[in-house]
Image (cartoon, rainbow, N blue to C red; front, side, top):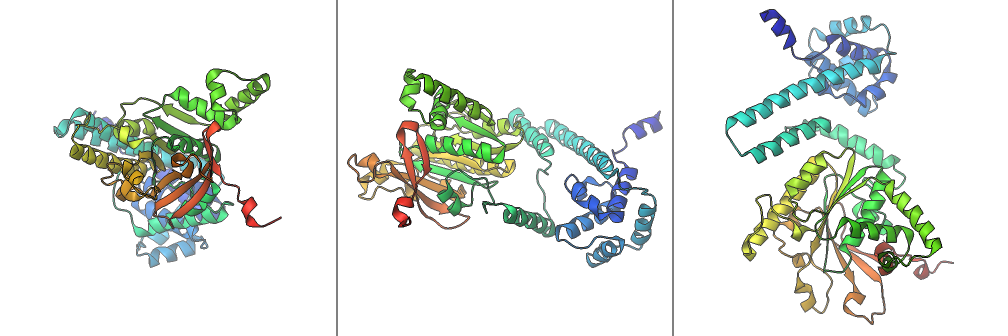
Length: 451
């Protein structure tokens, strides 16, 4: 009985499948791209198999010739070659009759690795629950993070060798070079802005700041719709101010180019009904999810986002309406500043954990209205605290006609890049179309001097 229980509790792994994967890659290098797409070195249970695969992975990344001799030579150079390795490599090759089924072997290895991870995570969660440290909510949040990390094929934490990091960066550079748009991130749909901020990049916290009524929500919706289409990934939109129906009307107006007032009053012509139906169909194909619960905290949003498959972007409208995880905030200005600072930090952590860009609207204080030049500055961030420190990119919206109804540049908006960790700051001109509540790239052709 004891021996049966020992067999049942054996750590999940398949020595045969691991050897078959290694052998297939050594006898046929054409297997490498497919296998590397689904397996990491940590998926191998055997330390020796892990060392061999890690060497092959690195060699493939840097376009080196892969065969038994070169692999052993690279293992020697990396200090991971043992006396037993050459004979083991010959044995693995001799036991692998064909590489035709390599992806089936790889699936077995990956499945065994996931089972081991689930067992380890289950033990860690059980330890958290019985340790008596922390409340049920904090333990539940920690448990969700661990399960989410498994689903996303990432470790929750831990030191990473710089060689592996460089291999990942190398792949990013290759992807960027093959990207026709030349952007490492997802395009926002505003080409002039994308050229400055390099698109919407993973783990970035992007703040869009303005005075009320300047169009924070509008530009966020524009970006969300375009990003969903361009990336074919899901977008989570959290609205703490407007209802989901109001947001849907704005999306319809922007997409159909029908005045939003007509949609609200129902005064739509037969032709516009047809256009509206086409617009609605197009929007519905985009994977955008909207939550208009006004009482959400960052922890609530994070928990929801972990359950969204193929997540590509998170949008929050807007920061000052959010609650801390601890509950309703106090009225004291000092306390509110601390709360907003905590929220800002938690959003940056969420962006890194989910590995997606997070866009958050932020309201500016009235400080700019006391100046002759009313363009936003970083210091105008309301209850700023650590917002400007945590954010990777801060964009300030400004329209001259917002303050001067007789402006010579009506509906010309300035998107001022106040902070940009990925490049330069500066100003990008945009076109504001109030009837469609839409921001668009400004057509500069009239001022180019070209025919």
